[in-house]
Length: 288
Image (cartoon, rainbow, N blue to C red):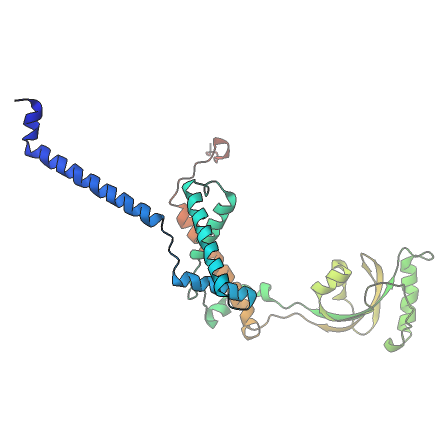
């Protein structure tokens, strides 16, 4: 009796051959099914509705049947090219795609609306801990007379003292229109935050306004443009507002901070799943 004949009569060999045949048949059928599903593009009713809605938001009207068919054809074309690009691995090592995928995952891991909702007690505690961020700064209204330091003649500071005497000798409403030198800066500035004044007249000029008396001409006050004679007409001191006055601003800043903390924590959890290997030159040096 040959070896082949003996093996053919062994039940164990029969079992192995039958198992291999079943496994091969299953693998063939499963593989074929996956290929068929992978190559099928299903345009659902929901997708068609979404395409129509995007068209309507863009053009402020519903698409015609021909336009809707064109939208569907464009979607199918996009899907075909997308799948074929994936087969070729074109999504790998592409900076734009990697960043877009990062943005999508960050969006999907955004905290829920419930997690970003705070009651008045939480907002008040946040306001108490961050008063400087919400402090309302002082506001000042003033008149100014500009003196150009580059104008020929006497020094600007000497002219400033002489002009100041003229201004103090007349009523505010009787100040001559031609006093001082021409400038694009406004002669009168309404009640404004110091930050706005600094953007027009410079930081040093704005800071010096806080020390000037009200309703009398003072100076000279220097700015990047020259020197000024100033009359403060109104001053409103800064203050710490109550929550009721700035609740929306506090809530917005609280949500932004909470979202940032949540995103950092989420990234740390994801990063913990990986071992990051850096080039030797970038590895932190061990303590001696």
